[in-house]
Image: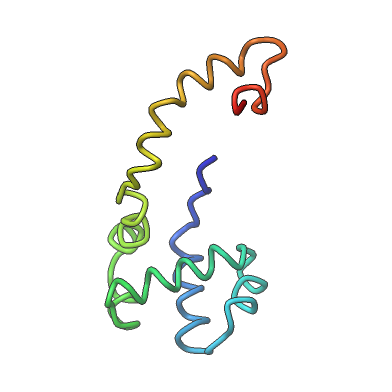
Length: 105
């Protein structure tokens, strides 16, 4: 199931807590109401982007959102192979008595 998109204001708050206040990932997660994993992923993606904190503050919301959604567009070959099977799994799971374990076997 895909992860819900975090709004841009919350992303900016995560960056502010990380860069200005030097909060830990756990503290950021508690303060913003996102999971530790999500907070860590946003911080890691920010660091990979090479943007300075001032640049991140000054760009518009659409550009900032694109930076953090970029990683979703890079495709994993294993996921691509598996995703080809999704329509079959969906069809089979709609049948009565079919569970994921049966499909796995």
